[in-house]
Amino acid sequence: MSLFFSKNFKSSRYSELKSVHILSTLEKLQARIGERFPGSGLGKVAEELSQVAGGIVELVERLPRPIWPIRIFTFLIIGLLVGLTIWLCYFTLTYLPAGATGMVEIIQGAESAINEVIFLSLAILFLATVENRIKRKAALDSLHQLRSIAHVVDMHQLTKDPAFMVPGGEKTPSSPERTMTAYQLTRYLDYCSELLAINSKLAALHVQSFQDSEVLKTVNEVEMLSHELSSKIWQKIMMLDVIIRGKERE
Image 1 (spheres, helix red, strand yellow):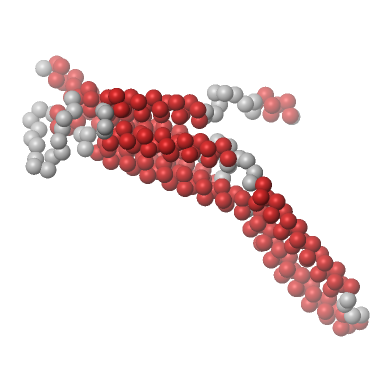
Image 2: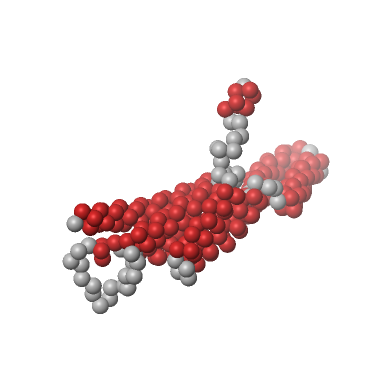
């Protein structure tokens, strides 16, 4: 059986995300945006994502590690509670009076002991999950940053609408300024899509070595959000491609 699992679950460098490659890809993307659109807001978003990514990599490396001060404190408190409960039971049984009065007190003591056991179980459960709840909160705070950045990227592509290139389109007084060429607009939208893809991969890092149902649920939400926003961007890129091909035929 152990041989079976060792063959099927053998670690491979191609079976998991590598944070160093994600950071390298993001660094190159940030450079490409800066060279193509110097001083642009999208470049600043990429810079912000790079800073957040550095913190995320440090966090995901710490998540699987035990927090020893909390574990030691938890073990001590649990041991103290169990020891105190055993001592109380021993003390009660030792000094119970004999006869009918003792039997009544045994029944009362048993009822009290059941309540103490329930309280002790809840206390142990609370203490045993402290470490995981601390890690969960740190992971959820990190994922919240990625969710916010995904929306910021979406805000930057909102006004980048290829429809203004359709012949016969008229500007209104409130229309945003359109200065990009078709090629520049394509590159800009593609950069937005790449940022969302990296954003999604950074989210996935959180559950690669830390299994928590709530964190996994939030990661799925961030990945779904990034995918939906990226799909909107690619609709614009496809529309832009149709417009360009139509102009080439004219």
